Length: 628
Ligand code: ADP
Ligand code: ZN
Image 1 (cartoon, helix red, strand yellow):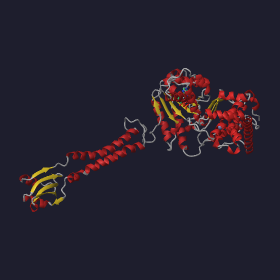
Image 2 (cartoon, protein in one colour):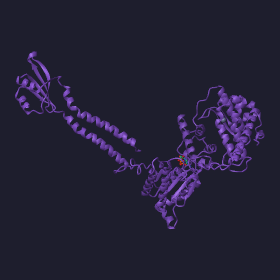
Image 3 (spheres, protein in one colour):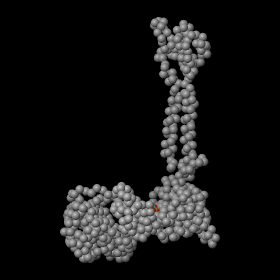
Image 4 (cartoon, protein in one colour):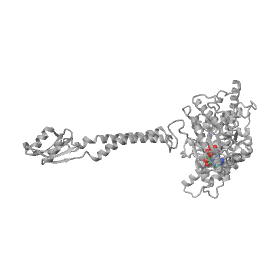
């Protein structure tokens, strides 16, 4: 449980309120107990004595330790009618009791409510007890008293928000598809298990390993597997948790973390998103940098501070090694880098195998077919995919996961939740033309990935979708492939324009156009695929972040900038012309496909190609290879 001031308030406020009410009720009982059977009429003490003398008193009830009396007396002037009168007595009057005893008066002493007395005592105590209890809780949690988990209140030592797992239970077998990384890290496991073997021959055990790779590729899993294989505890924290508003908090968290780690050595310390703390120093724009630098300095100090063979190995993960401070990468710190990439087809199959272990798959399901269909998926995507498929299977009350659930799950992981289809309307027709526009170009342009299916079932933000089967090797893409993609992406807008006219085109192409611009610009500035020649005209990452490369954005002149723009425009224009021409030339089959799509909602790639082949010789598509 996390502890915070909110929790303190949550506990002490009700305590204060309850305490106050107890106190209130205890201290206000005395008069109330008399009031309950109080007589409305009062009588003076002197008068009461006279009545006693005149034997007019029938009974006396004493309350409040003898300070109040309710007297029943008869009144001869009123036909001896019984009256109830209240008398305030002057303190405890012992002679009064004697007189009552000797007279024939029926008297009764009511104790000042015994339970009340107990409550009186408790009431005096409860409030402080609650308060002290509150304080105790507070201190206990902050770790100043023994037995607390050592979190909270004093900011520095506090809230060391790292997690510790004594046993991760993860093994190398659970990590799939990243064999090179696993191999390199196998060594770390040996270091942890048998450090003597290495130190005996004078080898220096590495302190830090940097795992570099996109999210979801299994970096955390891998670090856990190292701990699991070596049988050592696993400490983890995210870099972003080091960085707080208050200067000094991050640094003290680092100190805490390392203190705990050293106490538990040998162990693994895993720092996720290390770029959040480890970014190049002295380049920040905006606040919070002093804090980050202090934290980073503390981290460096700690890493230098312990000997190589203490058995603490720090594993950090990042997707941006380029932004890390050089000091972090020096020998004796994170001097080993291990790349963890998204898996290839073989790797994907292995990951699927790992995650299919605890799932019930129908015999028709082919994991290798899934692996083929999912280029670009990370390990986490694949795990998620099988999980979604299992959920769908349960929802459909099936016994085992079939290919239908897998297909739907892929769509869902890629494009989001399925929506309800539109009713037939003009906008549905327009969307159908838009999608068929993409698909027909994808089918007729030579280097385009083949169409997998076209659908009008909305998903996520999209109201219709055309799916292509990407080829496996996505790492090397040729110029004609990129041009084909640009033309295909423009196919939707081209169809809208050719069929409905310039005035009717819609915002539906917004996303397509964004992709088009990106691809075209990268052709020019990154891949040297334009008339500007083979030049890289952009810093490696287009993304701007508050840090080092803020000020070194453009490495080129104004003149080059406008030539880039001109090149980008010409690429897009050429492709758009091609797209429109293909739409115009194939109007007949497009109309037929649109009718079919509106009727069936989804056309799969095979059927689509067959229909197109009835009208056009698909092999002839070479004639449409985009020319520039
Ligand atoms: P990262 O730390 O790289 O962002 P994680 O290790 O947190 O990724 O991966 C999230 C989940 O995805 C894991 O818990 C696991 O279920 C699954 N996963 C990711 N990569 C792999 C892999 N290579 N093998 C098996 N499962 C993986
Ligand atoms: Zn589109």
